[in-house]
Amino acid sequence: MNTWKERFGKIILILPIYTWLILFILIPFLMTLKISLSTDYGQNIVQKLEQGTLQITLYFQSYCQLFTDPFYKSVMWSSFSIAGITTIITALMGVSMAYAIFKTNERWRLILLLAVVLPLCTSFLMRVYAWMELLSSNGLVNKLLLWFKIVNTPIPFIGNWYAVVIGTVYCYLPFMVLPIYAQLSKVDKTLLEASSDLGARPYQTFWHITLPLIFPGIITGCILVFIPVMGEFIIPELLGSAEIVTLGRAIQWEFFTQHNWIMTSSIAIITLMLFVIPTIVFQVLNSVKEVRENQD
Image 1: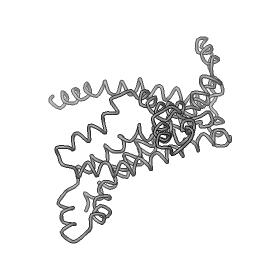
Image 2: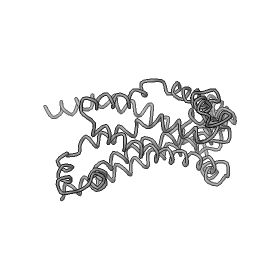
Image 3: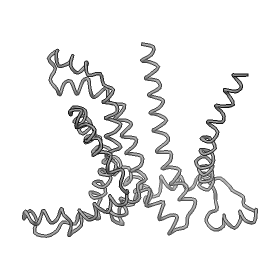
Image 4: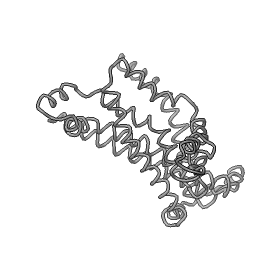
């Protein structure tokens, strides 16, 4: 009887979670996938749904177009390049920042972590607008360059991929720093002390001991940065130009301008797969690593 009560209690506890996942994740995903594989879209779908005469024929033309059409290939490459550059820069900055916080006195450590997290408490849109003001022709950056007589005329920082990368690095840097610091906090300091006692220099200790131990945190940070930047819309829209079309901007253009539900759904599915597949691979590799460590 106790076993039955325990099982019933567990079901009651997890039922709201699975209900939420089914209603707001699984069902919308299946609807989006169905539209992406259909031959009809837009208002025709709505009308046929109301009439009860909707018949869907599955085809993969939209997915083939995404990887063969020059426009969508350029969109994929633009999103991939911006996300890749952003991930590399945030990884380098994240490791150095997290390591500096880790080596700081405990009294200042919480303050520095708060400084990293504090920007996340403000509106994402407001942070992007702040960079628009800083990088504009009358912004602080150009005023300083003119005041120090480095340039004679304001430099157009906004409207290129440099500004987009600056915005993405600033907005997503905390997502790189926090997992790396969380992994650093688990490092046994006696290993670092032993390395120093054996004559290793600080950079040798970091390269051979610290870096391998925090590598899972770096991978987690890269996933948390790369995937959202791939589908980023606000930053390329405000800091970029019309020539910089990312997956997020392509979704907005296809849905609101072209009213192409099929292509919009296909891009959304591809973007989702870019998030799901690396996450699953990372989880599998972690599981294999843990099994091997337990066997050893």
